[in-house]
Amino acid sequence: MSELIPDPGAPLAPSGNLRRRQLVSRAAEVAATAAAVAAIAVLAIVIWTVASRGIKTIDLAFIFTGYPTGIGPMLLGTFVISLVATLIAMPIGVLIALFLTEYAGARGVHGMKLILDLLNGLPSIVLGVFVFALLVDHKQQSAFAGAVALAIIELPLIARGSQEVLLLVPKGLREASDALGVARWRSVLTVVLPSALGGIVTATVLAVARAAGETAPLILASSVFDPKHFSVNPFEALPNVPVWIYKLSEEGNPEGFNEAWGMSLLLVSLILFASLGARALLARSKRKLSS
Amino acid sequence: MTPPDQAVPSRVRIQTGAGDAPSGVTGTTAAPAFQPELVFDAREVAIFYGAKQALAGVSLGIRRGEITALIGPSGCGKTTFLRSLNRMNDSVPGFRIEGSVLYHGHELYGGNVDQVEVRRRIGMVFQKPNPFPKSIYDNVAWAPRNLGLRRGLDERVEGALRGAALWDEVKDRLKDSALGLSGGQQQRLCIARAIAIEPDVLLLDEPASALDPIATGAIEDLMHSLKGRFTIVIVTHNMQQAARVADRTAFFSLETGGEKPVGTLIEVGDTDRIFTDPHDPRTRDYVTGRFG
Image (cartoon, rainbow over all chains, first blue to last red):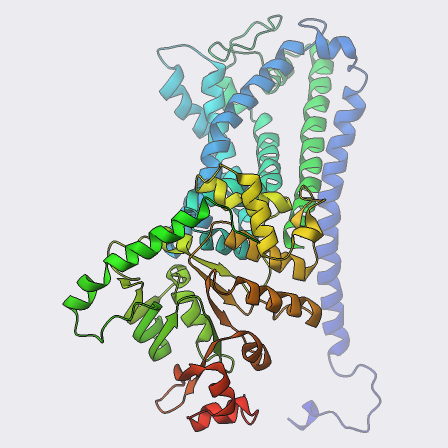
């Protein structure tokens, strides 16, 4: 026992097993840092691979013409499907966020957050099968069916993101509008929502960026299409980027591989720029709200 | 300085409504006779937040057209009492009130009373200025618009801003953001916003505590000019402020007799008397600075 009590007169250099403990501590720090660097490296390698192989394929014709010279119909289709999905998911997601911040009690908030997390964790192939059984089987494939699946993917992201921003709207603003004898819903519509609008748009963009690349539901809902056909009709199967990448990479045709890399680069850049831009916007609107 | 014309009938309507009601109310209760000059008549009010009692045994009348100041040390329940006068506490989890608060003879916490209607007639200005992130004009016009008072909106906004002694400072930049105003201007804007819908009563919760002395002086001058048009109840921790602006002063304090200290009303009277001839020794200690 007496060994554990250092002699007050001893020099302050490490004694006992301190050297070993410091080594372990150092090793843990190195491992954690290496893991973080690995994550950055994975992203960098993916982007580099996609960019270096895809960049030579991309030109104006590639973006604006149809098969076999370009992928215009697929880009247009992905745009339409994402738009329809967002038109479905955004109002419902924002209403869920309003339920969480303005109306629900503590238990309601807890339960609803759990539901949203579960929804967020659903595998996209399960949503694909669900939508297939509901909207496609015995009928026909449609961009709308795909959009419903993507809307389910977007919903929890929009709801949680919007909730986060709505919570930042100062309580004083709600008290002020309450004290003026204006009903809650009018306050929500004309004071709370406008204050949080920037953040809600951001949450939506992030959700779209996540959903736009989802492939599994679209293979089931919108994969039998004509790659030459420019169309915005959501009630037919629309050409779209993820499914076309999937098809090309299955075919074993070198031309098709190049095309797939080009499309991958477009998709990755769109998602990357949308996410980064949205986050910058979110940071700005958060600063504005908390100042 | 005159209020917008169309606002006058609404105040008259509120008053006549009150004139009809008292006979029925007093006839059915054993409480003391209804005093028509009272806007609020609180009787034995006790307020709880969950298991914690914040206020006990407050009986206080607020007279029409006067300024009543609620003073007292921190935590004595004066703000809690103020917020119970327009039901702003209703949204606080665990809030419960006992006793009775009559507003022009109507039970404020009665069964068919609508919170939104209560607050439309009883406005409130908060400790920290809380203008909406909108233009100066839209801040004042927001409530009238939402309440359907769209006719003569420009005149109404100007009247409210003049009423809050802010018009000359902002008339050339009504479209600018309200967040660009100074703290004192923001608070006067909040007062303008509250009086734009011509409420019957204004509740002010330490409206000058976040402001510098010059801005505080402007708010106090403003209160003198609003007196008579509105019944005003102000919570302040500043005794000089109460002495300067209030007709009547109510002193709240913590009653430490029970297990846990509970806020209660110690004494109420004309401001001059409370400060020069307090009847209760606790009031005397507080106003002479020996306590709190």
